[in-house]
Length: 358
View 1 (cartoon, helix red, strand yellow):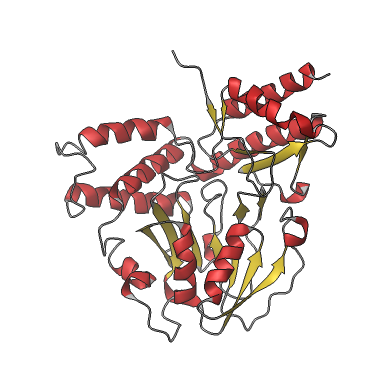
View 2: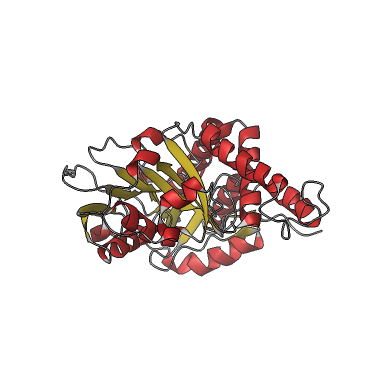
C-alpha cells in the first residue's frame, strides 16, 4: 500500500476525490450513453445538461446577479490578458501591479493601447499589496489580480471602484465570498480551485461590452461566447466535466461560505506554525497574506537547512512545497480540495524538524 501523500501543488491543483472518481467513470461511460466523455459530441442533450448545470452552479455558488453571464473557454488566463484589452481598452487603462501575472497582464494591454501601473509592490519583491492609491475616473478600467500565487499575497475584500473593475481571480475564485456586482469582469484559469487545466471561466457584466471602437476578432469577442453559450466552437469537454463535478462537491459541503471558513482555518493553522517555529519565517506582509498560497523561508541563520527540510518533508509525504524560483524557500498551496488534515500533517512535519534541530 502506498504511503499517504499531502499535495500542495500551486497548479494544477489537488482536486476533490469524488470529482476524480466520477471523471474515471465518465471516461468509460458518459451519462449512460455508452460513449466516453472524451468522445461525446458537444451537440448532444447529455452534454447540454452538463453545460447548463455547470453554468447554474457558478451562478448559485457565487450569487451571480442576472446582470452578468458566465462563459467557459479553452486555454488559460494568460490568453485572457489579451481578451481583456481587446474588449475593454479604448483610451487608457490602469493595472495594479502586484506580481508576475499582474505585470504580464499589463504588458499585454500595452500592446493594444495605453495602459500603466497605478501602483506597484515590486520594490519589496511583491511581498505586499499597495494601498492608498487614487483611482482616476478617466480610465476605461482598473485591472487587479486578487491573489498572487508566487508571492503569497491576496486582496481580501472587494474594493469600491469609481471605474469598471476587472479581476484575475485565477487562484482564489470560489475560496471566499465575492460581491460579483462590483466587477465588470472576473476571469481566471480553472486549475487552482475549480477544475483541471485547459478551461477558463469569465464572469461578464453583459452591458459592459461593445464600448470599444476597434474590430474585435470573432473568437476574441466575449459577446460571441455569451451568445453561443460557450459553444461557438468545440469546448474543452473533459475539463468542463471535471469543473462541474468539482462545483457539485463544493455545493455538497456547504458552498463558498462554508469553504471560506475551512480555508481560513487552514491558513490560520499554517501561518500560526510559521510564526511560532524558530526555523521558519513568512515572506508576505501579515495583513496581505494569502489564504491560498502560503510562502515561507528558513529563518535567518538557518538557511543551510533548506535542502534538508525539503528531503525531510518529502519523506513524510509532502508534495509540491518548493517555492517559486523568484522567492525561494517554500510554498504550500492550500486550495479548496486541500484538507485541514493535509495542513496539519505539514505543521506536524515542521514541528518535528524543529525538535530535531534543538
